[in-house]
Length: 341
Image (tube, helix red, strand yellow):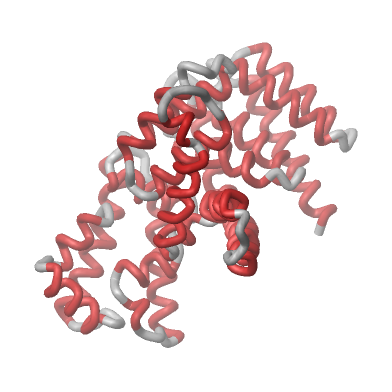
């Protein structure tokens, strides 16, 4: 298994170096550092390869191809949180006219690879969440909150299914960082972790405030790009974010079941297959969508399919979902619009 993984990463490097040699708009110094990183990787010096890729990224922070390679090395080093940080930028990156067609094709390929890797990150997130569950009565509240942050960062679905824990973790961070929030000091890592929790809790203004403040303290070009990218992502519409989540492989069968209310029912094999097919079809179409209009059409197809099933009474758990909608005074279309559809 280990050998197979190393071969995959080596192939990634060889493909990347071929791309870098001819890439339009690529920083020559960054390209040279990436070649050195490949040599270090071949010599099984992952730490050196990691450092060289980081230096390459500092030269060209917006290069998603570099970030994918860096993320793969970090994954092999088992630095899952930093790998996830870089993979998120790749998943949310858009094609670039300036960088050329070859770059854009690589970006498309690497987005697919990240989707395939998500199961590994989900598993690590589950492991962190289980550590929290086993120790949730501990008096080390801040340590527990950090463990929850790690779980939520690695496994997106955990954020939505454990909302009370998310609120509790946010509160603990706020208490611990009270001085920083009042502007008397700056604690980089915990403050940025709190910003992530704010963002996950849909507290957009609070997250933006922390990200903007971070830019006053950070001079490193890579960190500056990451934070700016996060701030820009905050301003994307719910629809765009949902598209990114589906394309990145972070939108799971459980998420769709929750959306249509079927979490209240035990799905049979045939129903599960239909849900899986709906998500798989959406991802395949997103991977081949060339414009924003084509991307949004994918969501419209899912929405139309769900609404049609509702009319025919074919949604699993529809009765309980209808009760919830009636209580809230909403239609299914209103409910789906809130979710980004």
